[in-house]
Image (cartoon, rainbow over all chains, first blue to last red; front, side):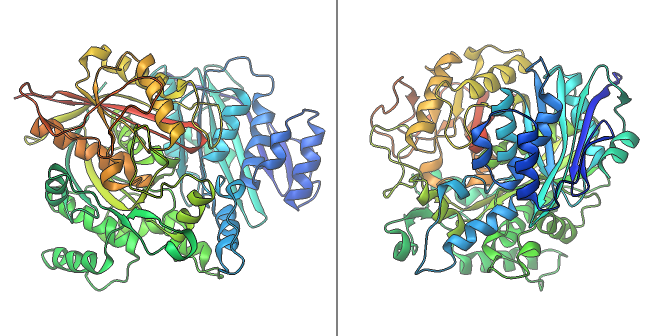
Length: 199
Length: 384
């Protein structure tokens, strides 16, 4: 476990705006996620109609992955994501559809997003990553676990790079931090750096 | 890499309050799947449900013999998880180096009543911390929620954490319930069978949901009574569709290939396969393709969904535990509900209880789920 890795690219999306490698690339367009996500999607000048079918958690994850992987060549990138609220924002929407026995309309289009790892599946589909993936849930980002797990995936040569981070959406509050770990990069992949990036 | 061992383990299911009772039910061909009370809204829904009154009695009895508090209020899911864990915690010393890993997809979602408290009620970290505190775990718990592979991926994750010296050992607990939440959702997907499910059969028409809890101890230090270790494992995504299984089964094939490569073994070394086998048209077909492309088509294969239903976050763990019992007893369990080939490529589905003359040594366990997740774990038994 002696090999040391680096973070080659990182991004952050929250109510304050969008940041890539620490630089703000878009000021807060709106703190309303629906308005923000749509405007930011169009600013990426890409065409992916499935984006509009996604729930908010998947939209957030998709936008973050787009910032880091758009120009990425290799497909050998594992995904290690985590959050606090699992898919609860969408779970509550599904619960609304079944709360009233007189107006009972559960929808497969909502139900399919009632798992946190579906946002990871959306990233895998978009970037064609047939690779190792896992989704953890924790009250706060577990930097220790994330650093160790990424090192394991790279040390064991299961993947060439790892897309790691936090993607949480709950009732209008959202935060995403993603970073790409590989052999070379702009900053060391260690506990202190990861803690700083994700706090 | 460090060798990682398994055991002891336990489960609580509709066909047994513990491993021994569940195993006895399995070898006598008993299924936990029955017609349920969801009929009013959903028509004939078959599911495998744990009788709560019986669970309460069992748990009270279990707790009487321990120093653990018996007066706390718990949800049904928490009771299931605790009942699965008590016998393990009695046998294993929890140290600073012991990690608790919780596997669940929906946690306490059944506790959500559409009110302001729902965020806390359904919180997975709150659930995991409650279990950790009850048993006196000293580290923050790790929660895996990666759809229907969670229970099996928890085993491979425990192995990895031990191999990377993150912890010395881990106790995994997996649990999920049959709630209105999941019944309505799977029904809206038209994924539920209105009969008892028939994995891999030509007349299969969908899955049955089930509820159960399972627990296992995973450790890097071989204890005298441990005979199983993890020879290889992998979890590789299909990158194909968020709800539909891949037609090529490529993610599952890659997961199996990677698990075999880690074990440095050829497909011929596998003695039997305990697959996912939900009994939906597309899942079972995907698995048949992947297993053929893995060179495993002639290996005896079963699905345990005909006994337990699809227990979601528990499925991979409870089915692994039963597969370890199959190895230990040199017995192959029939894939309940199977009569005639229903996949485009044939599989060697086990149709009757088979006592093996030669010792069974290796079992390949697989799972697949929403968002294209797949996990394969190769379990191996050390012969004495």
